[in-house]
Amino acid sequence: MKLLIRNLARDTKEADLKDLFEGYGSVQYCTLVMDEKTGSSKGFGFVEMPKTGEAKAAMKAINNTDIDGSIVRVKKAEPKLKPAEKNDT
Image (cartoon, rainbow, N blue to C red; front, side, top):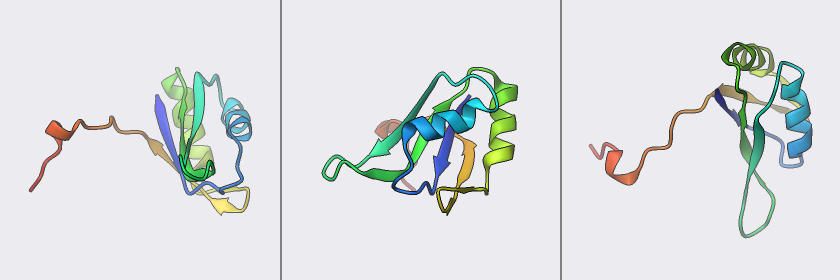
């Protein structure tokens, strides 16, 4: 299950985020979204956990908690829509 983690502190590191989620199970990958111009974090990232039960436990435990001084929000990541699939109403 792919999780979206929002409202991360700009100084949170990928390794720290991965370590946090590994406390709830195996992590397939962890990535922070970086600003191409500045090279700094945009304040959100993704964690992929192969076992749904572990991902749900991590999401429930970590959502609305303080990580590096920011209250983070964790939810299931929705698939990114291609431009043709977006509803322009």
